Structure formats: C-alpha cells, structure tokens
Amino acid sequence: MNNLSIRISIYSLLFFLITPSLSAQQELNCGIATQSVINLRQSPAFAAEMGTQVLMGTPVRILETVHGWSNVITPEGYKAWTTEEGIQKMNPVDYAAWNAAPKVIVNTYFAIVRSRPSVNATVVSDVVWGDILRYQGLNGKYVKVLFPDGRKGYLLKQSTLSFNKWESRAKPKAAAIISTANQFIGFPYLWGGTSIKGMDCSGFTKTCFYLNGVILPRDASQQALTGENIDITKDFNSLQPADLLFFGSMKENKQHVSHVGIYIGNGEFIHSSGTVHISSLVPGTLNFDSFNTKRLLRAQRLLTRVDLDSSIVSVKKHPYYKLQSRR
Image 1 (cartoon, rainbow, N blue to C red):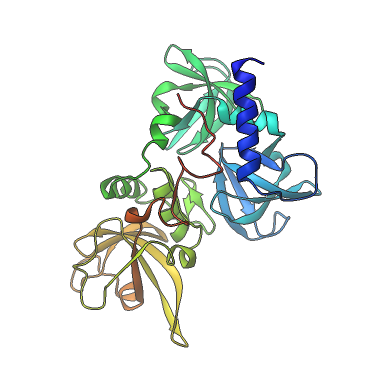
Image 2 (image 1 turned 30 degrees about the vertical axis):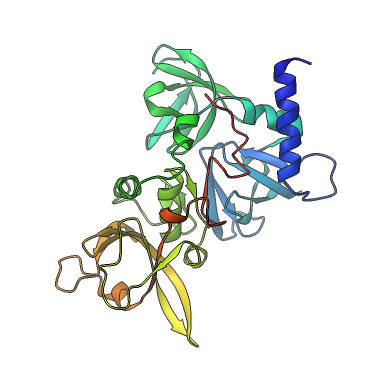
C-alpha cells in the first residue's frame, strides 16, 4: 500500500469515527455542494420557503433523497432540502480523497471559471466569495481547479487564496470581522440568504464570521445563546467591536430574538435590514435607529469563545472540514 492509499484509509477511518451513522444505508451519506450558491428549502419543492444557502465546496450530510430532492444537514447543523444535482454524493474513498487534496477558496466577490486559461474561453461556472474548489496546479495567471462533481476549469489566481492559509485564521481579530462586514454595505436583504447574492440578518453575521474561518449557528435566536453575555443595562461602554447585538421583544418574561447586528464601536452597529447598512444606538445621530434601539435585548461576545463554545467552531477544527489537506 502506497503513502496516498494509507493516507486515504486513515482519513476514511477518522471520518467514520467522528461522523455518526445517519441511516441504515451501506454507502456513506455525505456530499459536497457543487454550485456557487445553493438554496436550501424547508420542504422538497421550489415553492417552499428558503431557509438558508450553502456555498460551493461546503460539506454536508445527506439524510435522504426523495424525488430529486436531498435532505441535508449543513456544518452549522441546519437541516433543509435542495435539488439533488446541487450536491455531489461521495462514497468514503472519494470523500476522503477530496478532503486529502489541496484546496483554494475564492476571496473576491465574484469570479468566472473558464474552460481554458483565457478570458475568451467558455464559462464553466460562476464562483463567489467563500466557494472552495480543489487545486490542480498553476497555469500562468490562472489556477486549474476541480469541482466536486468532476468539472474542471481555470480561475484567475488573484481571485483565490490557499485554503490552508485561510483556515489557519482560527481566531480572527475584531478588525477582520468588521472589515468583512463593511464590504457588504449596500448589498440586499434576502430571507434565507447567506452569500453575496443576498443575506438576511443572521445570514449576514454568519457569513462575516465564516469568511474569517468561524462557523456560527444559522439563526439569530441560536446565535444569541452563544458566546459571553455582555452587560448593556446601563450604557454601551462595555461593548467591543465584533460583539453581536440582538433585538426583539419580551413575551412572558422571555426574550424573543428576531434580529441581529454586529457592533462596530462608537454606538454604531452594522446589520442587514432592507440592505446592509450602519445604524446608531445613540439618539441625535443622523443614523439613529430608534426602532431597534428600543428593542435591544442582549449582546454577546463570540470571538473570545471560538473553539471553546461548542456552537462557535473554527473551520480548522470543525468535523465537517477538519480532514481537509494542507497546502
């Protein structure tokens, strides 16, 4: 047995050890998202409500496939449906080989993968910020990439970053989270969205953290239960940039969270509501948000709890991703 075979066997064994069985089927129920952005729905129908999105290269667990629709679980634990062609099913060996291979992650808003290393070549696919593809080598200004479903193409090297270098940011700084958030100002609100093609409020916070190597729960009500609670009863002096602010209502002495934003300092926060924009908690300022200020419920500090809180996990240590190779 050569070194590659031994490596793949070890990866396969590790995956079985960390991944509980999801059905009685003999094949490994895992897959990789194959399109730039995939819409996941609450039930197996195009008319069903969109619950979330996953990006190309995202590993998922497949619970079942019914009439062309797959019921999957995302890395943050969200269960929803997508069309079968959006997910490349893999057996244990193929999945281990995919994880063992070097990757690149797209680090620009939008790019095109072409059939040849030329701007005049035919289009293979679009890709967006956060998509992950398999690295196949360099060709001048281009990176040759392999898609999860076997398609091949060429992507400008300047649009990519080594996956290994990216995931090494296991504990990003607040400045990095804020910088990412600011790059989405003006982007549209989209219910269920978690990509540059549109984001809802919790999709926005989730995406800002994911693009810095950290996976959060999907919904605002779930995010509100993570991290370290920060006292905001008297003023906002205890808040720090990148803390999450949660808004909603009190019902029967219980908090009902319905909105979330990222605190950026000086009484301001950035959030997705209509569009991604910056609002203020301070009365008298031009961007004062009286509606949300009145319904501010709590603040949570997440960056101090990465890989300490079971719901705030770095990509580097997440069981869905941690078998990725090093390049």
